[in-house]
Length: 145
Length: 131
Ligand code: HEM
Image 1 (cartoon, chains in turn brown, red):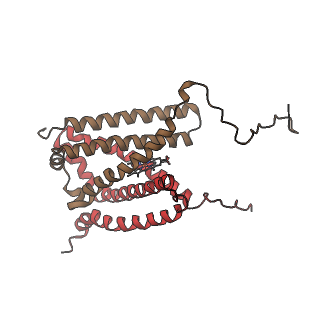
Image 2: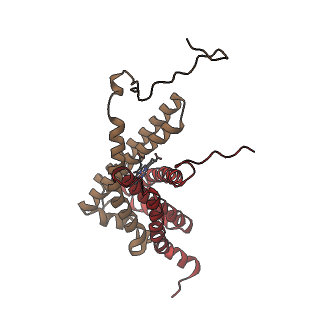
Image 3: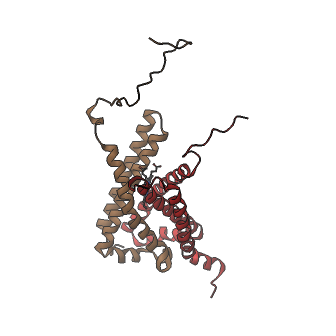
């Protein structure tokens, strides 16, 4: 076996273009990362309209945030159009952001345990936000007191 | 003094810094979304509790933070379009720098009037109406 002068084993340098060794577990052999990559782009384009439209209506149009209150929400959510808009925006933004944060965690958290717990925390918060948000949109009651 | 390593096409240049800004704005928006879904959920509790949180959004300091948030979202959205163009448009990688500068110009053009309309009311309550 080749050794360097200091006795440590020489690092293995693979031949150029040799196939990447894949993990053998069948779970790892999916195109998940490809679909995640594509989802970031597709959801991003949809969010341009949903999110920028939302920010424009809520913060700039017609007096902006100063006119918002329970009555304003009740008026908007009387229409299925805006409930659909908000539901779509909620789900897409939360999944897009979750996948983005998954990438960030993968980049910076190096210990396997840290990665695991940070991602679990992330996914718990994702399910909380999607469930609570959807519940509020579906069960909204304009006559609540 | 060690000499700084020679630059690359990416490192320390437009490509890297736009990525840094895209990442920071993305994470910021994500954390805001978490808080925002929780505060909006108060419409399911009572009109008065919802109106109470929304009142904080109307206060001058938080109003200024909203301007920052809108500016961050706008950058992230425009830069996201640029990323999609780099990935899917044949000449995208060649024009990535020009697209970044175009994006920044568009960003300024939209942020300036947007800021005006967003803080108009705050300015008027703090310093009195101009009319
Ligand atoms: C408004 C329209 C938006 C567009 C066009 C957009 C587009 C993109 C694109 C193209 C990426 C890059 C994905 C990759 O590199 O594979 C990305 C990353 C990301 N986005 Fe968005 N996005 C938008 C809104 C949002 C929102 C609302 C959030 C938060 C909830 C968000 C959070 C993130 C995060 C955290 C990342 C990861 C950044 C990184 O890996 O450095 N984005 N976005």
